[in-house]
Image (cartoon, rainbow, N blue to C red; front, side, top):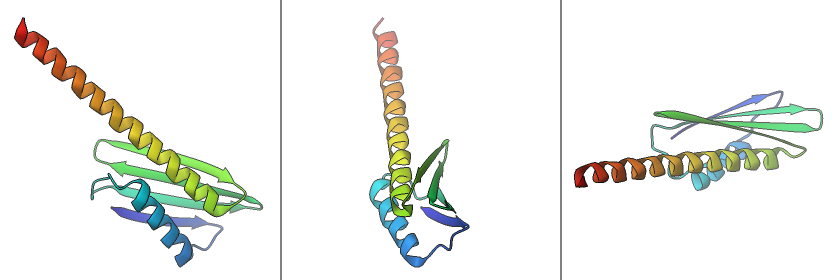
Length: 109
């Protein structure tokens, strides 16, 4: 998995990168090695924005969060991306199950 961290109006420190790497490894452990994770961090006065984009073969997920704390914004954005990926995975599983049952019904008839 490739992780890219960019900062707008903020310097991305090693502590921020380490925190993101640990959080993403823990939350998005089911991603393939070819996945590309891009994180954009922005600071405007007292507002902190975090944007997480996960691109894999076949689909991509985008999540955003805005809070008054940078680490909370990063955690929220990663959790939102995790929920979207899980929803996509569950949806694709249910489609496969429906296709398999439809094929079995055709074979039985």
